[in-house]
Length: 303
Image (cartoon, rainbow, N blue to C red):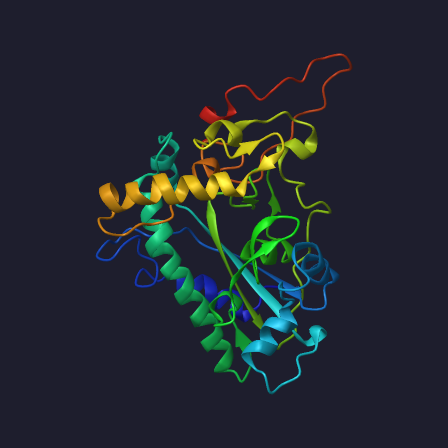
């Protein structure tokens, strides 16, 4: 059953005053959001903490406790509310044509769109507070910080993508992007609240279930789309990705697209792929002996 806060999120994003691609533009930054929920007592959150960084990664109850230090937050009384903000068709089309440097629309969404996402986080927190419900956006807490995971390198105290994964909104691809029913080209946000909502069923059992490679398809679309060579058969090299964005795309955006604003914009691996628009279709079962091969040209044909 759709919760009232879910309806509030969808309605807030439908207001053009809240969802402009850039100041002064009537064009929306995002399509209609997807919303999901998960219990703070879901074992997946404790597993994520232990897997990513038991010394720094927060469970939902720990994040809410930081926002309300005088109150004891019981995991079973906490709900995570997560949302996906899909890129628009126009932004996808513009970005799909790019090969080495990001499009203007994508960079606008990365900069102004994330401001929208921050405002949405605040809106959800304030809406719940108006109902007497303790709530907080973990990534907006003053204690939120980046960290180094012994297993995964670059990390942080709270991951929006992992929160969305726990809330039934998507699984991870080879590039570490979250593949959602609205596709991989999107932004994510979340809030934790002292309330109980029915959790959104997770229609998957593996963290990478919606990636074609998990179905045995030798898809290399995101590998081909990455100009930094940061995606390979082994996965996503965060350091190569980080260096390319900081040294190549951010200076380009500040120089050519959004003068004076060094936006950390890239996202080329999120478009021109089978997972750009949604969950990619699984291949039909082939007769015994028929070769499967690679998804030839998928990176160019998608969309």
